[in-house]
Amino acid sequence: MSTRKGESPAETSNELVDQLRATLGKMELALSAIDESIVWADETGRIQWCNETFERLVGRPRITIVGTALPEVLPLEQDGQAVARAFHPVNLARTAGRPLTGTYEWRTEDRRRIIEISTARFQAEADAPSVILVIHDVTERIALEEELRHQALHDSLTGLANGVLFMDRLALSIARGERRHRPLAVIFLDLDDFATVNDRLGRQVGDELLVAVGERLMGCLRPVDTVARVGRDEFAVLLDEPPDAAVPLRVAERIVETLAAPFELGGQHSSVHASIGIAVVTSHGQTAEEVLRQADFAMHAAKTRGKNRVEVFDAVTDASAQDRLALKLDLDGAFRRGEFFLLYQPVMDLRTSTIIGVEALLRWNHPERGIVSPAEFIPLAEETGLIVPLGRWVLEQACRQARAWDGEAGPRPLTMAVNVSGRQVLGGGVVADVGRALEAADLEPSRLTLEITESFLMQDAEASMTTLVELKKLGVRLAIDDFGTGYSSLSYLRRFPIDVLKIDPSFVETITRGPEQSAVVRSMLKLGETLHLETIAEGIEHPEQLASLRSLKVPLGQGFYFARPLDPEGMRAFLREQASANDERSPSARRPRPRDAVPPRAKPRI
Image (cartoon, rainbow, N blue to C red; front, side, top):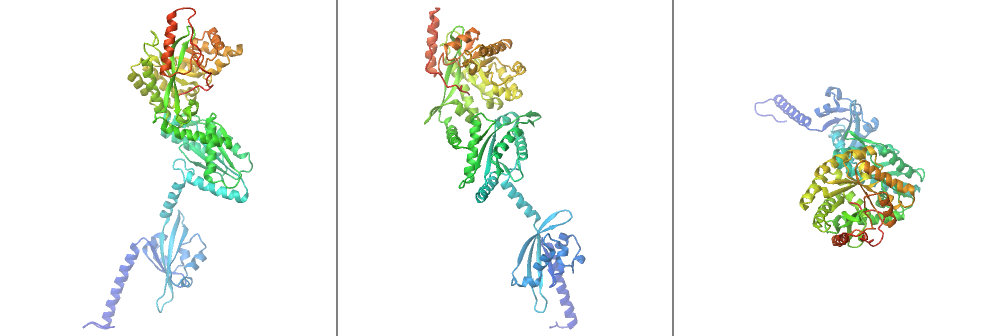
């Protein structure tokens, strides 16, 4: 060791010590300022030094840490002796000095923590081997990663599994079932008329309903089963290895029963129903996508066959569902391509056999299928929401057409009846749509009749009431269509601002079969008279039916006996024929001749 001029060796040594202390102090400050905890342990595994970060991590002052074995300071969830052996310098020597990293759980009195420990062995020439540990608290990072994984695999609204997790579990279940030769089943359900809940009560209440439905579904299943939300109002259930073949159907029926109990939504009680499809896997070689598709197809079959029911997938279901899906895809562009058109059916005064109005009927001219039945495409339009702009277009076209026929039907202008969908009524825009259509056509409001099915009105009578009152303020007339099929209560009928009752064709069809059938129509007619409502009989096809209705003094009627639905030019010809017959003013004035064939039983809707 050399000394500077004028300094003794002792003075030089003291200065070097001071410099070393200063350097070590700076190093300790630097080591304590970083986020990682740093620990130095000797060859016995006891702590010789640690930084302030480690003190804060374990909540102990350094004076109580130094000289203590690491497992005593960090009582990790793993076996303490195993941890000590892993961090012992002798064992670390086997790694040829390469750093080792491990992640461990550390449970304190108030929380569970995850720490990551990196170790490295070092040894000075004359010293015993030692080990340096760098410890990082990764609790928040792990929690964030777990939350991100959960979000990626679960529905944010209901907390249920999402489609990604469901398909993963379904694929694993199929593979396991093939190894064990065990069956599995998938239940796919769609809430019926869910869109009307959103339209009537708002999206927030609709979300509350979805959460409540998810909770009820969970209550119908075993812990090993999986329920997932796979669409806006669609849920899928995986029944893993059901005990017997009847279990899937029993579970589906239990779901139907559970959902039938009223939900309290938006301060009022509302009911909800579901169309349910079941696919059972008993053979090898099916993919998760194929199984879910089969259950989806069965669900659509349930919806097509009346809703609020359960269907099990089979070959017939497959063909029907694929056809329905293709039609649904075609429907998306049909409105834009102008494939829809209106036909008009006369409404007749049965006492004089003269026309007093018409009903507008929507048709779809499919480029490949030809004329598609409204019974097929109207439910699809309601599901997709297309029914709202389509219904608006029907209103506009029908009002213009009614105005265009002025002067051709004699001194009394024709009335125009238009069917209105439940989604239009509850959507909040139908009042404005009707007002615009009347104004654009310059049509007197009293000449427009809006027909709403009785079954829809009774689904949500209170919500419908508000819209009906607003429509009446415009001056239009309101009709209950298909009367006798919706189980109306007399109290509601008195409250509805209704002008017309339309007797369902099923009652007209059987009116000639005996006194009991005619008594039903007589009671409906009497009810209409009591409530001061106009009554129209639908579906008149044969002269015997017309004679029975006349004997009961039913005032108005329509059906293929008088005319099939006509295009505008065909209706003009019908009006000219009517005018000619009226001009004869003779008791033998001929009534309109029957037109073409008897129609399908299902009455078109819009």
